[in-house]
Amino acid sequence: MEIKKHPLFIVITGIIISVARLLLSSDNIQNKDFVVLILMAAVNYIAIAIVLLVIFNSAINNCKNKIDKSGIETVKKRQSKRELTITSYILTAVYLILGIVYMLWLKTSDLNDAISIVALSISIATDELSVLFENMFYKIIMHHKKEKHKN
Image 1 (tube, helix red, strand yellow):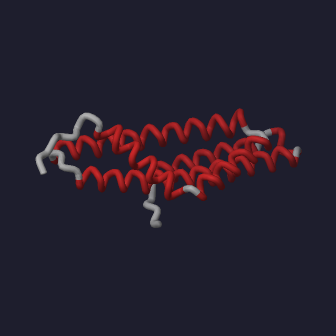
Image 2 (cartoon, one colour):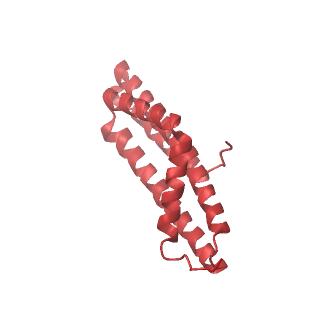
């Protein structure tokens, strides 16, 4: 599966890494456990983000293909794709906010372990989750746009 470049994801991931780096320059740097905690928090957060990005890209691309193949007007197709793009931006903003909150206030070794376990389980179910989200996005976006057509 090819992963398209997602510039916002890359920039936000850079911000999360920067937050981790700033935390490592704090007064707690003498505490080796703190350093390990920060590094593992950043690694685990980015790992789950990459897995989610693969699922998200697949779901969005497949949803766009479904929209293209649907029997609705071109104007409604464009509007649907625009709504899909807005959804993408909202989810990217959520990724940024959760990443900063996690790195600044919620990082613990237990939460790091939980995130790595969740990332692993999500990576195993990538294809199924992609289809699930594709169908969910399509139903939400196309709910009122589908015109009744005669076959």
